[in-house]
Image (cartoon, rainbow, N blue to C red; front, side, top):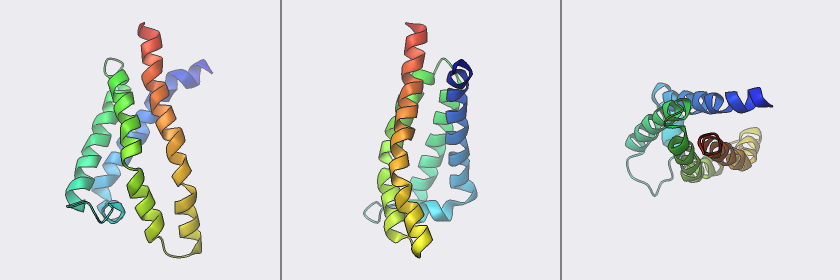
Length: 125
C-alpha cells in the first residue's frame, strides 16, 4: 500500500499530462465535447490542454503537489459538463452506453486528486 501511495501522485500526473497532450494531438473529439452554450471550443480545448499539462507537472513536483492536487480535483468537476455533452451526442448503442457509463468515473478522479492533495498536507504537517 505504501508503494501505491508513493506512486499515486505520479500516476495522476501521467494521466493529466497525457490527457493534456491529447488535446493538441487529437483536438477534434475534445472540441465536440464542449457544451454548445460555451464559446470558442478550439480555444477552450487548447486552454484546458495547457491546464492539464501544467497540473500534471504540478502534481509530479512535491513542492506544488498540494495546490495542484486541489486544482486537479476542481478541473475534474469543471469538465464534467463536457463529458455529459459527449454522452448526449453519442451515436450508436455501444458508444452511447460507454459514454454514459463513464460519467460516474469522474467521482473517483476527483477523490484521487483530493487524496493526493491531502497526503502532502499529512506528510508536511
